[in-house]
Image (cartoon, rainbow, N blue to C red; front, side):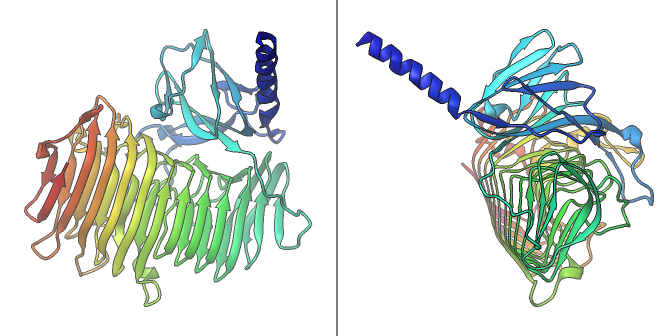
Length: 479
């Protein structure tokens, strides 16, 4: 019996090894590689790319020129597909004094030997390795293996294979697909207007670094599109907002990676006057807002007067300046309702992690933030224009506010915020935090706010002293 058990155990080990599979993609020949890290997956070298990111949280309203490069730095990223287990070995070019792998709740336990870091993951994840602090971090995108194939010869497929491609502005018609294969770097942007059934897929990189602010709308601009699917692609260095569903219906954004955001107004994903949008399983490191749900005046009409059914799930959001998860600030819309942010991780933020800014007429209601982990804010060198910002007013986990007037307000009618629920919000950091609630007047309130299981450093908060509110806030329940 002992021999049989031993044989069976050996078979299980062998079978497990056979089931593990990793797919690595060679980088284009002239693609600059990281000067900070080398990486190996299951013993094979993985190319480590560069991306320009914000160095410090310094910002200003658009001054007519792009952000100075001395406010930026180069970070690193690598990607691969796998099933089973992936043994990752990283070689740091710097001596390792401190090491953080974020989100920390992933529980990745590394072994450090000299300048080498090693650990194993057993499911697809997106995470950050920080050596000696958050600067020049390594972002790792471990994808599931793709299941669906693509017909490269289909005339409705714009296929980009491994290598560098100068695509410029790509315009998608109905039923068309852009496929960026692993190992490809495509310089360009994608537009689609008044279409249906469009797809943007692959494992490679769409790069807008050669696009200036006024040369194209957004990195991915979808206007009045029904049934769009965006999956797998890495979006690097947008010239303004990265992905904009504008007056759209039925959009799914799954397993995208957004990195290299350093320029002014470099948001991640901003659904504007849209319905039925799902954003899931994605990584966004943004200089400005990561995900912002908006209602804009120029998009407002009788067919696009309600924003509803927006769902964000299982996303990792590093925010270098603005807000990680936000509704607003633009809210020229009759109603914003049925919005859910769930199962998200915020490894870094600066101003506010979870935010509703109502600057216009919108009635914002029935919003849920649930099961969200928030880690360390970035608070060094905080400057707006030439004005230093008071750190005591930053690092808020939650803010809900109805503005009277703000620089982005374009409406004469004020709105409301009603029936907002927070469930299992976890803040883990040595930096202090608070919640800010502020209505406008007795007719334009922040009301019916339910906060359940709110933790700071694993301690459940039961005292409303951490909640700052003005006289136009009603019915705040903390349990």
